[in-house]
Length: 90
Image (cartoon, rainbow, N blue to C red; front, side):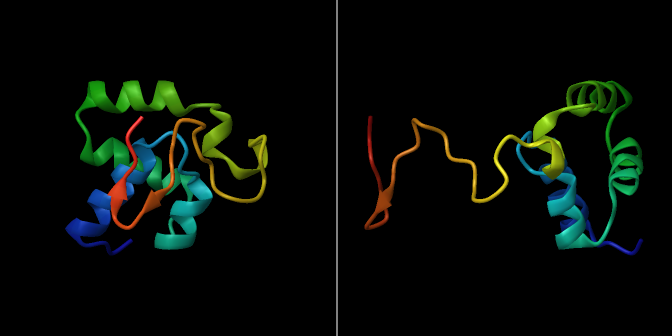
C-alpha cells in the first residue's frame, strides 16, 4: 500500500463518515476493509480508534449489502436543493 498524505487523510475522512461504505473506499483507493482498519489503527490515537471501531462495527451503512437502499445516493429529508450556488435556508 503506497499512499500519499492526501490519500491517507481522505481515506480516514471517508472511513469516519457513517454513510461512506468500505466498498466506496475500495473502489476509489483499491484497499479493502481490513486494510482500512489497519490504516485507521496506525494513524489514529488509540482511544479514537477504539471509538471509531465500536461505532462502525456491524453498522449497516458501512456495507453496501446491508444497506436498506441499494441504488442512488442517500439524501436527508431536511437537505434542500442547491440552486444558483446559493444554499436554501430553512
